[in-house]
Length: 290
Image (cartoon, rainbow, N blue to C red; front, top):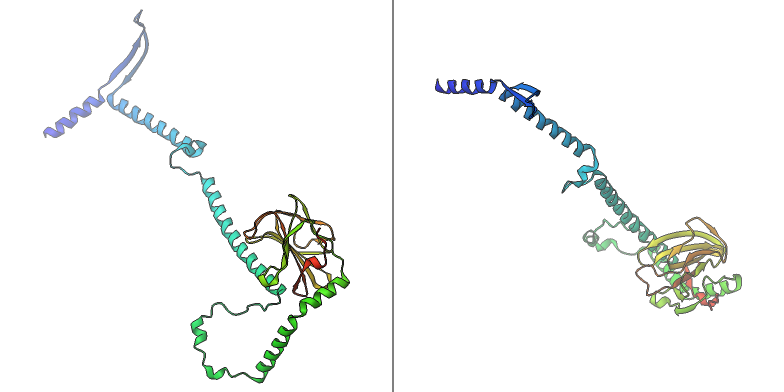
């Protein structure tokens, strides 16, 4: 009973009416009056706080002010980061594809056989093949003899290719300069390195078509030209490529700018290679670089 009486007294006090009056201090003239109760005052304060909170929330949500809140990340920034991650992944895949393509091109130019084995076949599974089925057949023996004849012929193939080139074609020097590294197939250096002034233009050695014009990790910006009579010229470590794949070029036309790109470089120079029928030949035997 006492608790109920206390509640009634509190409720009665909240409902008691009061008048707020504003008077002129000099004349005591009434300027403003407002009749209210404590309950009305509490309701008014709560409403005011709610309105202010709603306004602040609206400003934060729908204006750039939200970017000033500590720990807040802009939506557009998150989208840009996601796009960069996807682009980075795409570039990695493209780089791996380009490297694979270059390795195949290199194997073809060297006259090597491409590896067509399924990489998913494990060494363990191949070791389990029974030896009794590995007796060479007549066809195997004939193929082995053919391969041995081809290998024997390839020992003299370079000299023959060089003689044919000397008699048939006049090359335009791709660059004038000093040769710092000579042609040495035994060290797998299938071209020559030429040093020239900075920003010197690299020119096409013959009329031809651009079959490759891309960036590679090891040799930087590289461009390959395919010419008549199964001749291929390769230009590596360029700073800028002036032609793209599929472009037709004329002998002496600028195709790149000398540079120092790629991991396998020690300074600004051009690495130039000359291939005929899949065989690397010494460019200095056909072109005057001085």
